Length: 131
Image 1 (spheres, one colour):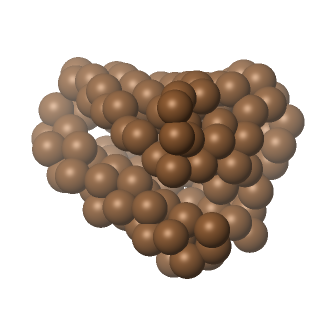
Image 2: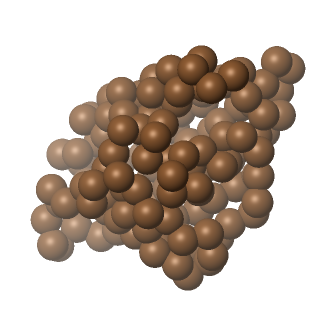
């Protein structure tokens, strides 16, 4: 099992970043893939048109999200992974720290790049258009 850790600086405050992930409409617009997310602990979510899904394990508004997470191309025997998103204020914007743990070894490489390509780079483009 592998773990990915990424720290990304954005020109947006933690509340804006938190909402880009948790608000289904904003998530969909920012990533270009249909997403539906519950805003409650225990609630479910899916993103990228159903490519990934899971449950919210903990939500601290504007500060942290913890989810069980899995993708459609994983084997049934693969355990769910754990996704932790932490949002902090930083001079000029916000810092997002992502920890994606318990990943099947064979998927860690493409997910490492996938988070950059399908989330963080697209978020920066979305923010540049919106603000």
